[in-house]
Length: 288
Image (cartoon, rainbow, N blue to C red; front, side):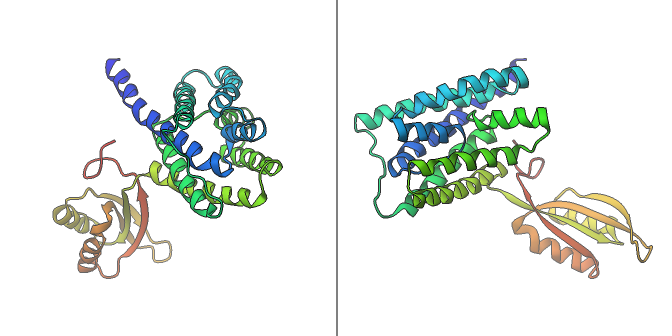
């Protein structure tokens, strides 16, 4: 019980760090340059542009009814981390608002280089959300709506979130020029790539599926010379009818040339399939 509680508590600091970075990106790059964001945060930004409402308050108020509905349809276990993400986001938004008001933070505002603002906004927002998502939390909002619709109707969460973001960002045309909406799309694209990078991990490996008649010998060589684990699968050629083996292993990128040399040395006619692998966990790689 205590180990489980400690494991959960360990995820809180990176989640809060992620929301702090996300909040900073919103106040430092998005708002001063009249750019946009998707989800409930995007609605809060629209309210800020239209009525000058503080982002911290509107974000929190918009999420309260969504959490009430989500608690009923999704249950407590799925919303605890999202609640942490939402509350810490509102907290950091409020803190940064105070720092800007007293002059401790001067937002980046430009009148001619919006592509720079969009690029850095995308990196900052993506980094923050990537940390939040990686440790099992969300910032509430559209994610809760998408989960409920997916559970009740069987719709794709990705399609629901994309639709909601398109509606919200499209609605911003009422308050900001269309050029800035296009810059927003650049920021959203960059953010999505950074989120993927953070979630999948900076460490990318390669998996090898090697079709050969000398599978056991090849597995032995890989184990001895590269100290990598190997799995053997039986296989049969559909056209030739010959029995073969599939040797499967995962290696680091810098070991690719070495493994190819070993394969070619043993079986020059081996058929090799190489694919990208992200976020590798286990012996010989990183431990989560």
